[in-house]
Length: 370
Image (cartoon, rainbow, N blue to C red; front, top):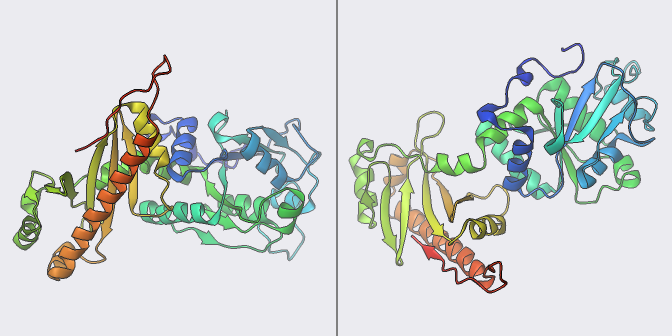
């Protein structure tokens, strides 16, 4: 433990790939479509003057998320006894098994992650169950770290979402408590996910645009078994160096065979790039690609292009899936049809709202699928 904070020395290492905390926040929020700010929480063992309050911890967390404000909480401006104990401002009662940080906390700093000036201990995400399901799904897939759930219903944002991630070095989901919902204004459809910052940083560095690129990283096609190559060629694909390519319903579709972390191929990735004519149009289309979180679809803007990718989970090794004959063919062809429907839907939506030039005139911006 650091003498001034609960952040480990490992957590103080440079952010991977040179990403700033602002960039990590923007990437996470854009990928999971989180409208409110992410909240960085830093627990300090040094004295600091209180900023804001008197108020409840959970209420100030929500204000940071909604309004981008910053606060420093001390024992002097905290009005909830449960939060005071959970955050380590006071010693817990003997026999109390609620999640609590060790006594000794002098201040807790709450700041929007995209503007935070210090290294946080925990990142709090306020959202609805569907979006947090998407976060949990990818946490499990990318880091092999499933989101666990431990809740009492009385020490929620302070204990379950803040203390547990710090103490146990894992993400934890909170259903909130009556205090948070009644006194701090949390909506009925809101939950809070707490993620240790080192985990958040590593996870966010691996998702978003990189996930699309990863899905497009196939093995060398000549390394595939002959029956796999033959099955894909029979569907109308042509073999390239690291992918297959084919024309379906007049459009070009690429098929990749990405390997999982164990080096096995148990999924296929279908890719279709949309030329939307401008970088602005591509960004708008990326934002409009509002699929359910956890869906096997991804979209990433790349200059004037939007890369749309559909993952087909085989749930078994590729050669075993191919051995199923017509079942495998039907799976791939249905995936291609779904990808084309998605791409054409995005193109159609973009045509309905043509961009305007600086003089206010409409710009003729054709949408090309290649």
